[in-house]
Length: 282
Length: 281
Image 1: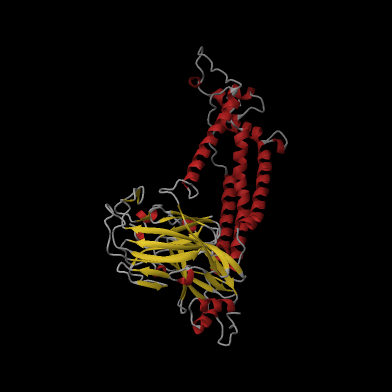
Image 2: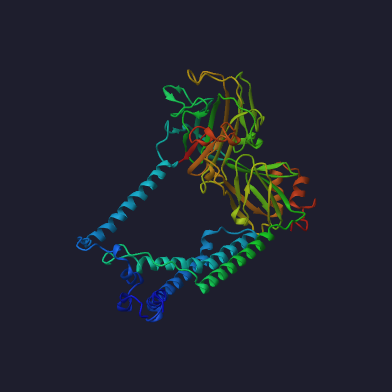
């Protein structure tokens, strides 16, 4: 046996062999990893209930599921890093009564085939799963509904304004009818802003001279907040406003109270002239 | 294994790798013979070091936090102080008696000069316009506030014409009196002839429904701010609004009167010239 093989043998016996598994460093790291993983999974499952707003659209539900799945899948990976770091800091720290001042560097690890294969395979699988999941969720938001309500969103320092084409209505509150697909046409008149009605599960940058489209379908009545998600200057923190998901009739009335003609309001709200909702507006 | 160094064979089974390796290190890396050995650390040094580390970390983090807190809008150290609204008694609004207060405000084409010994802005800049003489106001909650603004500055076109509309005032209008004495009450002005705007909204979580926007017409008869900021001709814009719930509200100008990108840099990005806070108490 060569010198290097002898050293490897001693190292293997010291770290992995000899004692019962859970008394060895590998076993202790495994226990720490298990605890950290459980903590990470619990955070992934329960934290969204406290961190995410009440959702008002199916896209919001997709975002919720994405946050949970991504966090749960990332938990064991992050836990392994933290477990090794945590154990190393305490068990393998240099002690002041060590005879060597300081201890020499350890030998670099090279050419461990099984570890490399496991590492690359697991990483690739995780990335492919996350990519597939992300593209699926994103694609659902790209479906074009021909009768979608058009809302032009304009960001400027430091306010959002919303106009409803064909009605002449332009406001600073975002009013949306329930169960009606909405297409947001988002732009900015100055710097880059971030249009983020978090409760609707969509977010997109508002860029100057560019119109970016994002779609959603509000399905739950209630109020929500629109925030700016890009640091945009002095009053970025104040760049937020209320939004409401209302019934089709309430939306029709709201348009008229903001200056739309009854005909234009009915057309935008999807209400027939007799006051009943059209198929899209129901 | 006849060529294996003796040091490895004699090491106890639980010896660590570097302890094995050090036996095989060349002689040059060892402590020279006869040199004094390093003194063992004092037993008190370790806990003392840990305590000192925490103390230093606590002081450093606390100092940084205190600095940032002192820079927020909750700081009482405002340039030029706070203008507390003048009481005008009470007024009946929708069948309820509410306090009626008044505020006065000016816009200046540059932020130098002083009025009554008080600077327009403590950091005056001749290239930067400013609201003055303070950017901080205090009004009672749920009261009728009548604001009178003297507009001394020139202007131009808005980035977004929507800000030429009056929003959030009583009646949805403001009264505009030109330098030649003509008075008009309107819900909008020409979006291509705006000097500044007074635009106000609440801090997040205070009163999201509150919003106020009043455009101020452009004024081409600029005063000489160096000698008499209040000496020129001016537009008078008067309006009333109901203050919201208690809390902090931000106001700013939405006319692009600054520099750089979209003319919202420079003075528009510097706190206190074209921006400030209203403290509703």
